[in-house]
Length: 360
View 1: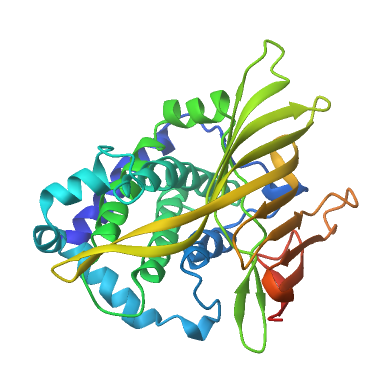
View 2 (view 1 turned 45 degrees about the horizontal axis):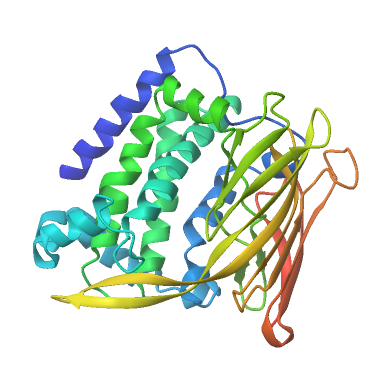
């Protein structure tokens, strides 16, 4: 009953956008770049599997204990008061909800605001616009369902292969993810981040490989850019996701731009402490930098170099770079330590690409 009320509330709040004038703030049916690859299945893969990178876990489909991990998260998010009480309300509010500390071991709130509230909210709105453009009924409801779906997959993977209380999942799934949906249901919020910051999804091209069935080249990344000159040809550049990069974006003509940024990337996760069986995790970080080439804010190519040992180099070339055709392919290539690499090909009309992986 409790979750029926939550679903109904989200539906009522998001459906208000249906009565407003139709305008797409994020989704564009382009035939090139990251926007050409945007679809709900790709979002479920990129958003849901993203955390696998930080935990350095197996990317094999059968390496994830789907039922066990989903059961653990479900128990936590359906009894939030019980698990928060065991964890400690002050600790929960000060580390997961309110920005009270910038100590990386106590700043679990940071990704909740950037990747769940703002990033997740934008993704919900773009998904809703995708459903609307493709003629689905109740597009904002399906957008919310897909957004919460990838968040749930993300939480079950982050939970790990055991049944235990998970307050991080409670903060994300019960507070920040629904708030993002509500905020970005309002046109004013969607327009603010779209027009002022040119926010968009610049995720890689998710793919699968076989023997065994595994996931490749996934991740969830967002871009924000703000003009710093009157001509707006030079903009401050912020890239958010597994890597956080800050730099500049320079227009080469009226449509194309090159962005360069440097910063940090997540290299691993470590357990800070355990309270009544409920753990608190933080991250180790390393240096990272990247160069990006986009057309009309649709990413055409990206090169990321980082201290993450599984992917020292990640190159993504999206459809539309080599030929202006809806059948133009995309490619990806990654290199890790000791000669590990992956490579693959994507197509605009496929929800995901196909790749190969060499462990050494």
